[in-house]
Every structure is written in structure tokens, then in C-alpha cells.
Image (tube, rainbow, N blue to C red):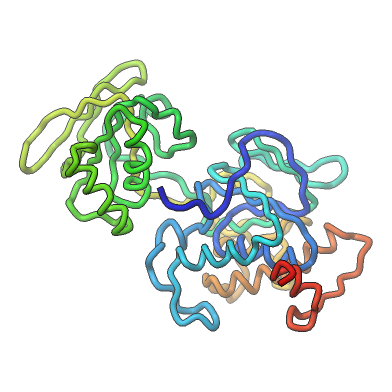
Length: 353
């Protein structure tokens, strides 16, 4: 399994903070830094199981060429460096969770609840959700809906759920390979199926998977799933079609399908914000939405002349942070110093070194 960059808080429970950031992509992560410089605490919510958003999930090895002063950097490298940059500010992550409801409290703060029952209250919300929430693509398998959530899953939230299971993992990307490697030690049997012999995952993961196959610890099938057998939500076998071996079945009691992700606006569309073609209209002074106290940065923000660039999102995060300050500290006057001239900021960011 890939190294964890951050620890996620256990789901459930009630939390209070200064700013809730919806989305832990590059813009959301940099917003933690800009807010942190002003003494503002943050919690981040993201439906993915790791930070980085599109950059880390869809383009982990694709070069990004327009980050100032960096000739070339991959999405994975950028995410790693952003996480290191914000470490001094102690942001709390709520990964693998989706913001599903928004309410305003009697004191004027905002309370967000996630799909796993976590509640977070803060005077400010910053939507940094890129193009929207990432949703798993469903496999084109007839009747798959009948097994979803019972024996067919699109993500792993609790590894122990799969102990002693006979698991069929479908896909050829990082998620499929990571979980093949991670579940093999605890599962009764792991079978990996992909429609072609080429894999999109990290070369090291492919090599480790192939070693398990060679050792007889994992079965690998180059084929396609055409159907599922079972009843009452419990899968018994997958119906397979292969160019070399024809039609056959793979016995299994659990299937994990990793067919990629698609982006949807999701529950954010119900937050009462002024939308423009599924994007959120903001001002260009502080990137506040039509609802006071709710800001939006990154790809989802809409304003005339908007460019969907990471560097534009970084600029938006800086101005958003100054706008948020007045909600978090209504009785204070913002005295901002450049990081090059503010010794206290330099010590805070460098950890006192």
C-alpha cells in the first residue's frame, strides 16, 4: 500500500474549527498554509482516501510545468511537498468522507455533516473541491446494483472487513494494485482481473503484484467481467469472458471494482450557492460566494477571466484567507507581513529552526 501522507480522523464525532475546507487537492492544501500564516485553524473534508485531488489521483506521474520556480513536478510530488509545507499548522483531515448537509447555527457559524456522521462547526467554509466530488465509476456489469454495499464495493474503508474473504479485484490502476498487495496477507484468496496485460499503476506495485502471481499467492486474469452470480446481495461468482479461454467463472464472495473516478458537483449543489454552469460564482476581491462566510477557490470557482490552473488557485487561496480572517477574528485588525520579513512567521513555518 502506498505510504500515508496524512492521518485521517476517525469518522463520527463533533468538531469545531475556524475554517472547514471542502476538498484536499492542491488548492485546498495551500489554503491551509495561507490560513495558517494568519493563525487560522482548519479541518479538511475529502471523499478520496488521500490528499492531492485530481493531481494525485488522476495524474500522479504526469509532469506539471506551471508551478513557479519549479521546472517540472508530478502531481504526487506536488502533493507530498504541499503536505510537508502545511505540517506546522496541524490541519485535521477527514478523508473518505463527503459533505452531505450544511446548516447555519444560532450563533451564525456553519455546521457540515458528512456521510459518515462527522459534524464540523466553523464560522467559515472554503469550497476547494476542484470539479466536484470524485465518484467511483460503476462497472458496466448487468445487475451489479443488486450487490453494491453488501458484497461489491468501490472503495476500502475498513481493511479488516475483507479478512478471510475470497476477493475478486477488478482494475489496472493504482487503487486496484495497492489493494491487491494490501489485502493479500489477510484474505483467504485474492484474484486480480484486468482487461489488458498493461497496467496504469506505479511500476513498483506492478512488479510486486507479479511476484505474488509468480509465487501462486495471487491469481491474475486478463479478461472481462460479463456478469455476476448470487442472490440476496451476496455474490458467489463472476462470469468471465476471455479471448484465450472463452467463458468461465471465478468463485468469489467479495468484489472490489476500481474502474476509475468521475467528478460530480454532488451535495454542494444543494448548499444554496449562486451557480454558473455547475460552478460557484465568487467575487475577485476575496473569493466569497453569494452566501456570506462561504468562499470558493480552485476549478469550481467562477468569475470572468477565470483560468483553471493550480497557480491561479494558489492566488485565490491567499486572497480568500484574508477575507476569512474577518469572520474568524471579527474584533482584530489584520496585520499581514511578508514571510521574508516576519521572523515569527519564519519560525512558525520552519518549526523554530
